[in-house]
Length: 378
Length: 150
Image: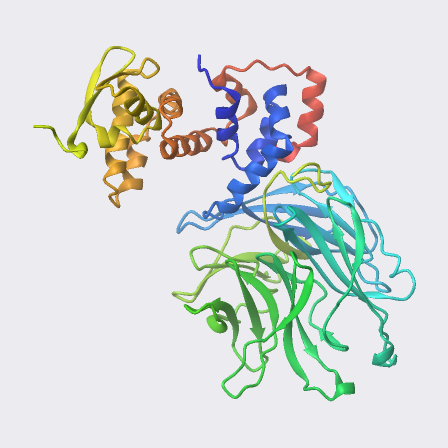
């Protein structure tokens, strides 16, 4: 007989992957009680976040109306991937898109082309419960969502969604554009309006959804404020989840000073930019890094050849420098997309085993945790 | 001639009366032993909660750990590489009692690794836990989390 007290059992359980813990809810009532305790969920999350192995990272694929979670392993000759279907309880005839991923929570949006992502929902694929966010009153008048981001505020230990809505329309003079910035916090389960929005009147966005990197959310935009005759230039908007302010930052530049355009992506804890140029046979990945004087500057990280055809932005930059991405599959296969891993050192791609998913629409990376989308506890 | 503190030796006595002579500087990796020496100044320290077999392994760990060699993690894997879960649990309880944080955490991780793919029934057997769910409750919970049981 082992005299393992609750504290010791808790220490062992906190080091298990979320999937094991979800299963072990069934061991006995005491374990179920322990595993669902918000303090334990937080403790487990902390272990997941400091784990450098990437074992908790999974890919979630939307293949309407189903979702699949893919567990991939890329260890030399031991490639494997298994996919499990996850039940997402809401159905919609509108498109449903991934808008954010943080600590195991996914933010999804129902796309209504009038208002763009009017309905937002938080979901942890480990469970079937979800949190449909309250609606915004501003949208129902004449606005549309221009920028949207999801992340975690470490100072208040709360999850936040930031949304910038404007009532801009084609032909509407810029000076008449109203802008509203709203922040949703999970603990209050409500939206609040804040002062101070995007520091420019007229921006052309690359994508509505922002990229979360270390407590800030980033969007790449073009400042086209002809009214003030400012330069037509690309820049990055950054929203700090703690002080809730927007700031602007530079994009990478060529030697001649021209600014680069691309999509933003997270690269191992740093902000990255993924640049596709028609004329170029490669995709260039830039990364924003700090030098020894704590100055941030953009540097080229790697090139990824486009020979494998069109593909969406890289899903995940792994700890061993390899890149996980999805590409279009061969015509004759049932699966329309497949997963590959790119190795930048020897510049090769290798396929992961087929996941058996047809009608693969989009994917995003997430970490598997027990965090509740309804914000119970921590 | 009194020895310098680094070379001072203490004797650790296990529950089954085995005695181990170790350098004090290594023994105090254990916070528990450190406190006993500081409070009582003992040179022969009884450890009634740890058997000889386990104590030998713990001392091995502390010895390798205190030299700060780069082979640390490789050795840790060897010393914890046992086929028997019960041996790991004994190490865990010893590390807990002796308050050796790094060993405790490593063994926790090892045990977690061993049980993570187990079925619910296997876990109950390993930890000697009774199933206190009714069949209806069990079915309901299992259906809710079907993906984790695949």
